[in-house]
Amino acid sequence: MMASSIASAVATAGLVDGLAPLQWTVQVEGRDILITGTPTAETTHPVALCRAWAAVLELQECDYDDVEDVLAWNRAEGPWLLEISTRRL
Image (cartoon, rainbow, N blue to C red):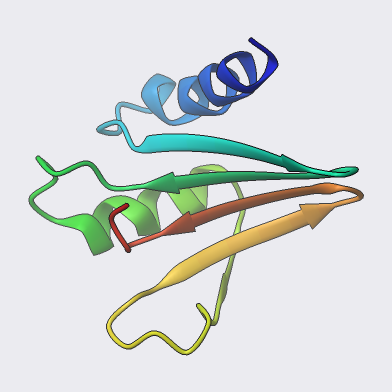
């Protein structure tokens, strides 16, 4: 229940700005909370969409575990890590 509420809250931020939706997942590992957004299978321009979401959520571009052709943006706040990646799950 908490995970779906967090995902819904984050998803609303981009939808208010008219962005196509991302697929959101929430993982809780101990005290750390990782919120990840990735393009859906229907996304035709995943890089542009992820860049737009990153701008709305004020995320910084980062490396993504040395995986080729994957771009990522994130921001950490205490135990929270919000990340957007062009890698589809």
